[in-house]
Length: 390
Ligand code: SAH
Figure 1 (cartoon, rainbow, N blue to C red):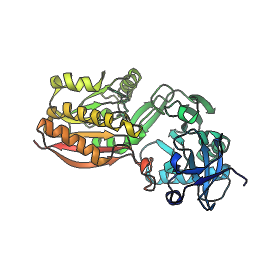
Figure 2 (spheres, rainbow, N blue to C red):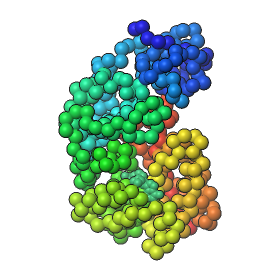
Figure 3 (cartoon, helix red, strand yellow):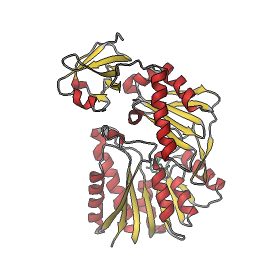
Figure 4 (cartoon, protein in one colour):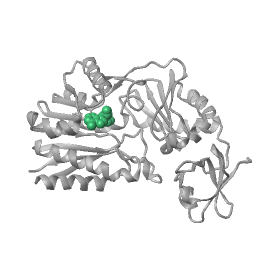
């Protein structure tokens, strides 16, 4: 294939050949101007082939590598990648008809996310390269995934850096604006058009399943940043007395609808979780369980301190209201903050309150969000289960 060439500085090719997909600006020795997501040949300083990528001059990551073989990125290429991704999910996921079927770089498809809600697919395109390859991946997705419909919800931040406008709308069939799904025997409504992200937080599945197994009848549970109420429903079904808090009206409406569908009675309130924990929590305390699941505050390295500060505050306000023996589940969904750093941040808050905690477990994003170790950025969601000792 006769493609423009991007030359990588000496020494920077090794990580690419070991399946790391991103090339940073400072690693590019030369590339043509004016590339807007087109296919390129990535070569090392001796002009030896590394892989086929897509390139965008303006991005912080001007090149994304799609394949280490000199092959066309045609429909057949995408069908093979999609088939591999589906095989993994089919083998490992049980008791749900909702799953992430493509997780971008983690499935070796940079910038392309697809969630499957009972056959209704919701797509997010995050990068220019994936955008330019739409005519190849969309027919491949339809052929392999056999969806009932496909809806695009590419309205996330970060697209403008790639020179992309927000895009939403039907790509195939007649996508419904809400899709009922089943997860662990719960009936949940997914607002695919008006909700956050693609409509549901599939990634927290293993953490809510574990909560559902551990909560005892009569336990008092606080589910902060509850979104559509999934943690609350698992807890209430187990017999707990649960309060869910979210700032977003659509989240609370959906959570209430989900409670009705399952004939469960958690309480949901629309509030700022930081303020609620600081001022209101004492009225309802003490708690057996508190879930802290704030949104990804830190997308970039520079924002890490604000995420640490947020975690510190949440832990600091929560801990005095936790019963001895009670557990706080601290979730961070940003790659920028590691498990150790999250733990250290909570340790400081606990020390400031004179409370001691024990780490019982760490749960991660569920298996439909793979975490290849060659691409550490893929492992973004960590939940620390911390029990109050005294
Ligand atoms: N726990 C949820 C996912 C949480 S996503 C689940 O398992 O499905 C983060 C949520 O935090 C979003 O629903 C967002 O509306 C909410 N949020 C953001 N800032 C908030 C704040 N200050 N107080 C309360 N909720 C907030």
